[in-house]
Image (cartoon, rainbow, N blue to C red; front, top):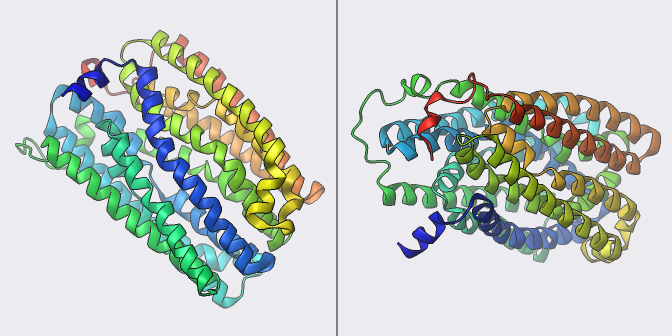
Length: 452
């Protein structure tokens, strides 16, 4: 009770930082482990085979990103209202609704993953056996769709449990990569390690979330009203919100996986493998970005009912802190980037040092705008976020393809910088308009007046 009381006395920024700390604790360990198992794969497979592995990995993760519904945002956005009102029946129905979204996304992703291999496999120069590996790997990642249990833990402010569960993923990947390395396994061995890690992590986070639901007795409802059919009536515009946040997040794969795929298509697998390593190292900066965004969103969702001024204050403070962190990270990468590349991939990947610097610059820009997108979603403007991401993604794809063909690997990195600057600028403009105008009634449930 003492810990819970102290948590309730915290301000939104302090809670967000604390929760970000929990997320970073899990992702920090994961970041270190990811570099180790990536280094094992790069050194044991060789440049050519590692490039093929990187392309298959990026393809599978792209399919997973497209399929996942980001149902945790829907659960937090609408579940917060029912939890504040003490209506466990409605909250339980929202949980069932998001769980069905996850299941439907997995089925749709399975079809997309199989069809995609036959469409793009030959373009990457994959053999028949490599196409089969890519297809099976993309299917296995669909078992890692865990939006609903993640949303449950974040809704109940149990970022600590989420952090513990998330550490299972890199730990299992590292263990599998070590086994593959010691046995001299081929690409198949590393892909199996990745797949098993996803399955175990999904089981761990579901166990943690269901245990939390049971502890709070949220699952013990009086069964008032329909078990599921009443979700749409009880939660106005929930479908619109779910689709908008899903498509918005799916577009983020353009920044994560598409560059590696584009380089593999336009150049070769060795260049794609080099970009994968540089992206992984620059991605160390994305971990605090994601941690801050995910931790600040529940706080902004609760503040959305108090008016825009409080949200404006939280966004401003979070952006300044994140921007300073981004500048510091850029200096560190410039000083230690070559050493990091040599440590992870060996001398064979020193050619991507300049690419690493440019990608870190792009990540620093995104880190500066970390709180803007969750603020827009919390204000009931996911449609505006979607519109911005669609426009920027379309420009980015065209720019990326042209710059890779015109300037090679460094062109892909500068295309990412351009898109990051454009994304943050457009989101900020949308945020300024959102806080100066009344919230959208077509997205925000009327019942949020009761939230606190």
